[in-house]
Amino acid sequence: MKRTLVLSALLALASSFFVHSNIYGEELGSWTSWRGPKDSGSVETGNFPSSLSKDILRWSAPLPGKGCSTPIHLDGKIYVTAPQDGKDALVCIDAKGKQLWSTVFEQEDAGKHRNGSGCNASPVTDGKAIYVYFKSGTFAALDLGGKVLWQTNLVKTYGKDTLFWDHGTSPVLTNKHVIMARMHQGESWLAAFDKQTGQVAWKVARNYQVPTECDHGYTTPLVMEYQGKESILVWGAEHVTIHDASVGKVVWSCGNFNPDGAQLWPAIATPVVVDSTAVIAYGRNDRGIPRLYGIRLSGTGDTTTTNHAWKRDDVGTFVPTPAVHRSKVVIVRDHGQVEGLDAASGKTLWKGEFPKGRANFYSSPLVAGDKVYAPREDGVVFVGKIDSDGFKVLSETNLEQPVIGSPVPFGDGVLIRGETQLMYFAD
Image (cartoon, rainbow, N blue to C red; front, side, top):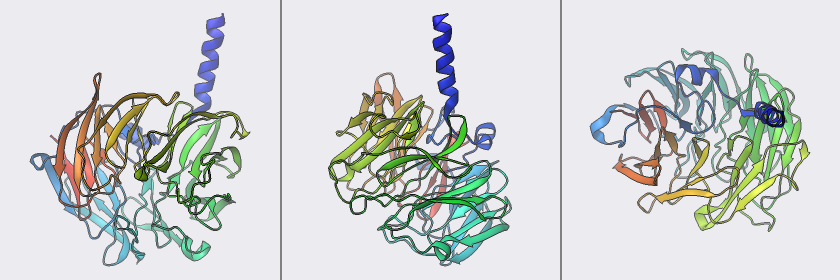
């Protein structure tokens, strides 16, 4: 009887919280948002290549301009943003690398950072429409043939962002709305727009007093079910918040990620969620000041004093978002160290390292099966393998062009978005 009650309680807990899965991504083997159908940056099964060498380059498709967003795909069609003739654009490419169409919008607002562009944000689709956002403020929905269904400009409506670097937050989808977040010095907010019309459904302020630049957020929200309701998790300005997806109201929050008041700590890496723990990367791992937190996603209201499960100050990541491998967290750090951790305890399970170079890792890793794909900003792409012995490096390939977008699984191969080409590798 006691075992039955315990099992029932565990099942109830599991059913009260899970990261939202896009049914199109799961049923059709598609990748319909930046980090995939489960926001995990991973796919569990498939016969993926051990090397992304030129010998297995199936095709490469020229892109019209420099972009840093990650491609998505649905039903064998790939969608990627890129500037075209100095304007924002969405490009559609088929499974053989042929461009099918491109839709051009307004003038591009070019990137300030060497690895930035006007199209850092990745597109997202629900199988009915494709939603895009650009640094210029252009925010639009298109049908699967490239026809614009609606278009607006959030910069013209709400003013320019004050981010020190280039906008990086991608739009995400709930059942009814397209969600956008702006986190910067000034009026910060989370907003929902009607999928059919682009009209504002709700918009809530999200402002916190934090040290200089710590209110700058480049992370992407996560859509999930929390305590039986569709919800949105947001990380930025030294707070994790969960919002009711229907009205935007904050139902849960947690702070205290920078008790010493350090400055110049923007939020860049998006959280990953494993079971009921959110893993939050903060600090400045690029400068040898890593911070990594495990936060229990339970309760309501302000949980700052109760829900910090663990903290690490010896491992972390500044730019690359972690991925998930068989319910464990995989971190590729900014200088190429790789580490697997248990989400509930924060304990290291294994560690390794890609060969050192002068360049950093800006792309977020893909975990496909037991393989880890990690491009460096200079275009050197590494493949590693996770096994019972830990982690080992399988290959290193120089693609001879910068790579900032994240790798994407496509069939049994991998898509890599370079500065000038979209490339597809498969055995």
